[in-house]
Length: 509
Ligand code: GAP
Image (cartoon, rainbow, N blue to C red):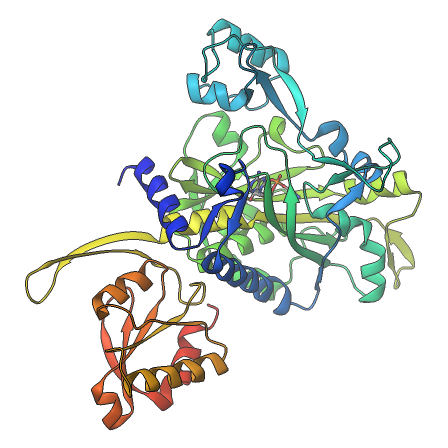
């Protein structure tokens, strides 16, 4: 399927089935903002829960937090975002359309712009006479644009009341560092985790859920002793060292060579990763993404080039996904060193450090940060799971369906329940089964309208992995058929075994 077709079909299906649609749609939509419908909300929650299960519940030393979205200017001065959280824009002198200079150059000239200065970007635009894509007007020279949304707290608009919507959840985890380590009696290494909305005033939001102005971050700030950045315990390392990955370190990118395929452990043994904790979090994130349902062959690890690293990062790797519009960042894993804790100590006058009781000394921990955006995961998942199938049925009639092949534990609705016909006592039995399933916390969807075939097509379109049909045999022997979405195979099960069966099928993998 052509990639453009896939993107259009995904958007159409997401809107039709209440997964996600533009915010303020009746007013023409608001670029970079999306609302989640009932199916999308469950999908989001499912991914959140899987993340929480993997990175918080199953570990002893990662603590979840939830903090303010709006924080005063001083925080963002300390973090470096006021000075440096910028993209480069150009403006059309005629229609005043504002565009991201690097995107414009890449799209029109296919020139890589990573690390180019303002003057260099302006020169490329002038030399190639790049014009406004809207009206062919002349463009201004390139200038920096800060991506943070500014507001004022309280009734007075002044420099003292200036505040910003957070562009990352990370900063609060540094601000709350002392509180949390004390409250949890934490020992190094330990992590603080947060899921929550972040805001970036992107110059040109695009590619559906990929580049948004409001999105959800899932971040962990993992604090390690500065001299123990390679001390990953065996029980964690054993789970990731044999993962097969594609990796693109800096030197291969410089030579324009393809990625290497190797085992996770080789990336440390060969000195490709600067420290083992950075590699551990990269591999653990990779493994989780595969279990969310992403194709491992469409994932690769790419090291940031020196000139693209954030101001706080000593090293940074992206997990990239091969979206329909190219290999793009899905998640970043950065070695933030002690940059943030030291900057907040400097700006607030409050010391942020860790007391090592045995040695009776204080250290400023280093931070390894796996940071991902929930919407980019959803976008990658939708692209992976979308399928169109055609086949001949037993009457040699052509059949077709569109479906999402979500993992059973990620799928929004887990089980569909259908009475064969919309009449009692079949309806009554089907309703009873819905109640049993709901009482056991399974999300199910009841449907009695139109033919069974059409009901299957409807639930396939939202990726429901199992469908139960109550038929006349049910009334005789208390069995039902369970139809499995991908294979379309049907088998009979006793109603009394359903809960156990689904518990096994739907537990997080
Ligand atoms: N705290 C570090 C940080 O925020 P980042 O690379 O700027 O690092 C991390 O962002 C992740 O957040 C990205 O890998 C991506 O998944 C997501 N993200 C960033 N900007 C986004 C945007 N405009 N729309 C959607 N997701 C975004």
